[in-house]
Image (cartoon, rainbow over all chains, first blue to last red; front, side, top):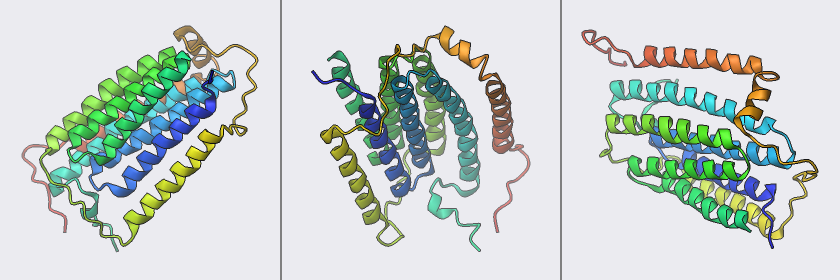
Length: 102
Length: 176
């Protein structure tokens, strides 16, 4: 009989975080990169829940709630930026956004 | 035993969805993969007795955020071909190598069963994340952060309007 301990959840969260990081580094579409950021945020949320359970502490779940709120605000502003850039450049590729280069 | 079965099933669904996000050519499929991952994480929250945050996860993330993502994908257009060539030399090989190292390390930890870095001294009951218990903490110890999130959401909404609003008769100036 195998018991699922907090380490299992932390490992799953680490795998999800790595996949999100891989996507950020490899993909070029701003929308996909943004989804990868969401993936990494969710992986961190899973660690909060698992650690809160292992430590017998409800604050972990409260933290998840706050991360959710911040992520929702971030999505709204981020997507507005992507739409604004797309209106000017007709492109969502981050490689073409080199206006700030010196 | 039930928890193990749920963990394996839902955890593999979450990983499959995450892989779909980064490998899908069509952004809509990527969004669907992300939806699968977010929903799977909601199930895992229920397993960990996070009832309220599981509901919030499904409503806010799988509902509102993914709808917003799909809306923007449809607005920008799904039929654009993404340039997949890599201008930075050796970047892709380096990334895949780093990801491989990470997966091997995590796999060694899981297969070895070494979780000594996780303090597992739970003697008390598992914290039950019902609405009453969460609210009991959030409206006493965490009241100020809770109020600050209201401010944050207001600023976010105002910022989104300021960024996305263009008057119809004013031409957009071209960048130099």
